[in-house]
Image 1 (cartoon, one colour):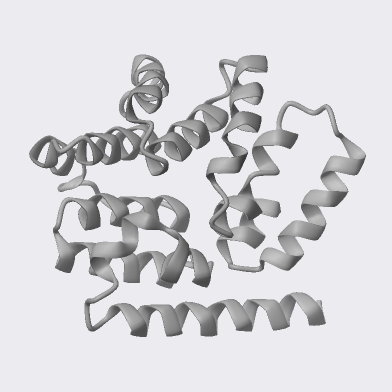
Image 2 (cartoon, rainbow, N blue to C red; image 1 turned 120 degrees about the vertical axis):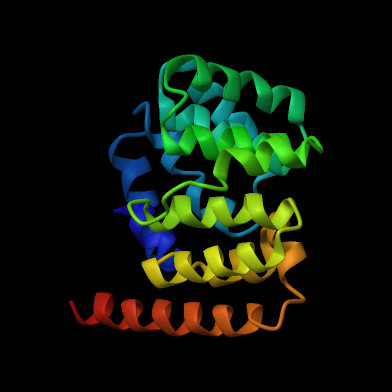
Length: 204
């Protein structure tokens, strides 16, 4: 539920649910991983890496923790450290779309644009969830495939990925897309979709 709230851009509600989780299960293996979601979407990734590292050390076979940590390290430019976790995921399940995305993003971040793009260029995005679709858009954006990145970002928004400030301001991989004429429209649509969900949550 916390992830769903975060993906919808309902960070206040996600923060409340996270606090309840921490109070209920402070030592749970998933608690430190889930707890980073609101800080991540609020632009506070770097300060939460240590907690993810402890979580992965405690549960090294946790796929979600590995993905989160690899992503956080990629965002902050710690590419060699991120490679360790991407390599682990590749060794376990190289065809899983989240692993393909993580590998592609890291390759592009390292400057290997062609190989990174090749990994995602022919992916069928239809079955992918909104969150993963957004992260595929990051790969295209960072590889300077701006039109494709905008199209995939719009698809992610239509699927329900709408943390507006994360998209509009906090996410560094979105920077190449922000000057595109459609970007502001996508952000407006995300805000409207997020607000509509927030109203339904309050009523429900």
